Length: 209
View 1 (spheres, rainbow, N blue to C red):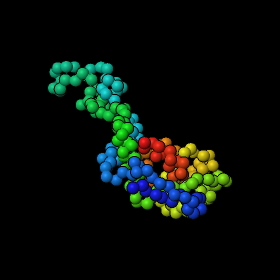
View 2: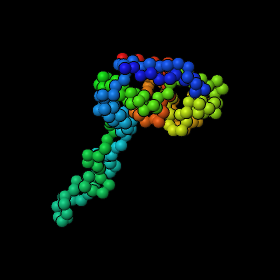
View 3: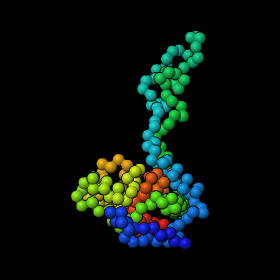
View 4: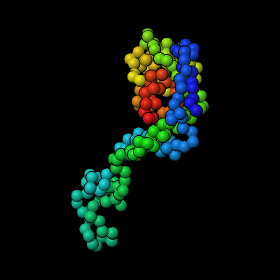
């Protein structure tokens, strides 16, 4: 059965209905897909720049520290050996990518499950358009207040990022502006409220086909 939500204007008044296709609503499966998608996203965000030097990269160590025999000490060929203070590191971290690959079908399933849960929880708000004519932050805050979403973190999704909206929302600490084509599973779950324009939601659902 399709889920129907109200479409609001910038004053918070209902101007229409939005009906979700049955193929988009998924509440029976996909928990593992959501977990895998979030893990993959967070792994991909890691810089992977941690690095240590091996004994071949540490400065110095060209000469044998002392003669081989007669010293009463263990033989040593370099003072850059990993067993010496200031020596190289054995099996230390090296620059690498932490990215994980996920099948496209798994990502689509995860998006469906995450979106469906937010719909059921009542955290998805649909507006006909998010128009800010004067580029002012107070105008954007007024719209968020009208939509009753300004009491926590907000994800605002639009089909294209408009300059007026970008300027008006840039100083709102608890709001993140995204193109509908870039919204991912992690963001669907992270924010307290999801605000989609109608066109943005159409574009996002198009990704779930």
